[in-house]
Image (cartoon, rainbow, N blue to C red; front, side, top):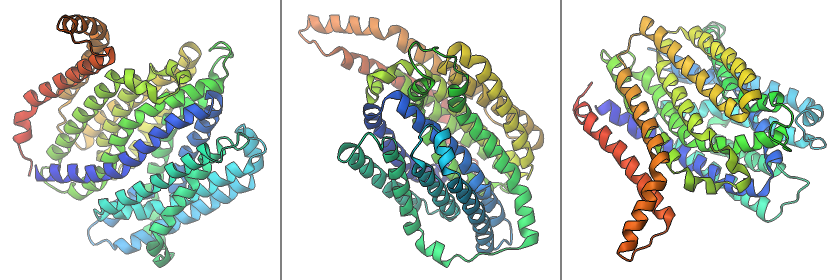
Length: 496
């Protein structure tokens, strides 16, 4: 159990470095959706969908490769660091120069004509992100989670401050979403200062034989990440391309993307849990792979992770009646996508857990095949569902894709690296979550009316929203009580 506690502690610290920044960034949606119309916000969402896609190419799977080769017996961590950093710098400089060269036509392509500087800022931003990714990975490997968290928190503090300054003090409509891009770029330049010692002391290094092995390991991971990012971002890009004209009467496809993108932000809460867990779990899996009880340890980790995700899904969904006020009214129509996307992101997080088997057995090409299959399914589902359901179709396509990848990874993993996951129990928790969500929606109003009537009899007349919130807390408490009742013995067991 000590190993689980250690992982939980590191996850909490990485969560601190992810949750606080991402939550502060999430709350910027309150400001963004009140400054920008959905159509303008849709352009911003589209740009960052492509940035997320390109970031995978910039990094080329070298984070995971660094972990794998730096933790091998007898490995020279310093040498591995220098080689991976060298390759990432070469790739990122080359790609950013190409983007800068074509910044003018790209600005027209992305519906920001006359603002080639927007594209240039994004090119520099992606270079900076890539150049500090391996130093961040080194912090994770050395278990310096507090330093990791500090850098992330300072970065977002700068970004939030700049957003407030740009949008509330010096804002001019002609600059528009450019303020958001510039704030992100300036904030990320801070990372160069944070890692200045590491970057200054770094010297390019190359070893043909070692790099050849690293490249063979990294290339499938890059393809997997690329396909995975397409799976995640494809729905946003394709919504612009495949949404029938006038599907939402009188509204453009950019408008629909703006609404979808703003509501998609609610899934950030689940994304934070997944990301924080991944930061801690990836080096954890590699470090404990040789442990005789590692399969039971990994199964236990996934079990706790699933329970946490189910609680997040329930908590966000039943409280959407309050959370919706984070968005301007114009964006509320898309809130129906939130529960679907939360479950989809949970499936993606479980897939990441299941994927440990092909990383530990050096069969990373299976990850490429699985994710490529998910990509094909994503394209097919978006093509079929967007013309029928609009952005709801995109949400269902995302869920179907991640669930299919999860199932495929589990089946193959049990063949090559069997892990005794508690699948039946974990499916049960998901069904419990869905039942409680439905129960909350179906019974909230009758419960509120009955409670209001009873309290009125004793001269108490609380606000209806307060009654709703108390009821939702009761629903969440029921979930936690059931978890405690079922898991109390399991928590006491040990895999050490």
